[in-house]
Image 1 (spheres, rainbow, N blue to C red):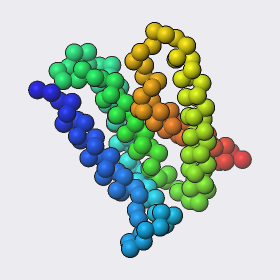
Image 2 (cartoon, rainbow, N blue to C red):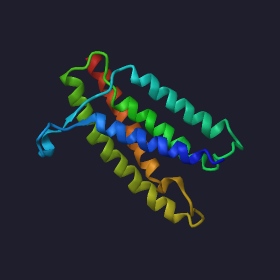
Image 3 (cartoon, rainbow, N blue to C red):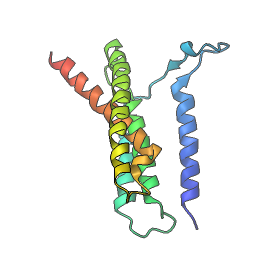
Image 4 (cartoon, one colour):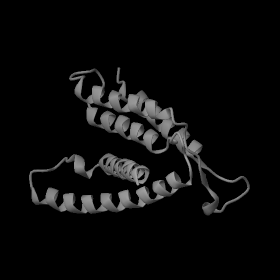
Length: 163
């Protein structure tokens, strides 16, 4: 029995429900600027941590599990889902400063991701032996974006608390 298909369908349902929860449109309004972002409760970070640990266990713990022939995809799905839960979870003392830090972190992480991919793509093409590289996957792009976001957000949060 192939277990990968139900897992991927579960992730599709999870991402659709996540998107419908986070992006809350104003009723009877088609203005895209009026979309409100609804953050998850702060305890969802623990569920995100469970996804991240589950991804590492699936990628490195199971060598020959039936149906998981593409462990890399399952690893990236778990890791990205866990990091998305971290990104969209509220802080315990959420205020306007954190909303400003979130928006600034999103812009900085997008620019850093574009710069990093702009450096890695030509280096990958210089090596003629690379045919199926993980650098070319969208999962890697999303992973870099989320890691840059979280690192910049928590760094600026730490710096703002100490000043």
